[in-house]
Image 1 (tube, rainbow, N blue to C red):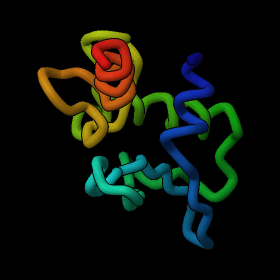
Image 2: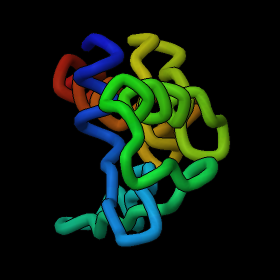
Image 3: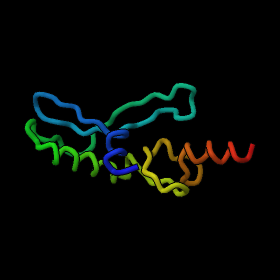
Image 4: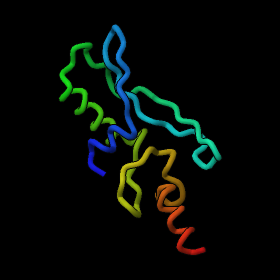
Length: 102
């Protein structure tokens, strides 16, 4: 996935009368049948009239925040921290490994 795809999938921008807030996806109970998705603010609020390029730059910067995102050691894709499970491997890779083993 490209940085733009990742930022679209794992971040969002909430616009308020005070400004624009970049938020990162946080998955609660990722192994549950229906995982809960929450959003957490990252960085500083952007001005109401921030340029689209600046908003996108802030979204990409959020993907580098290790409090919220990490690289899977197997596929090297950026994932929310809560989706990186055993030994630094993401949930998608674990499912693929289990499917191959079965």
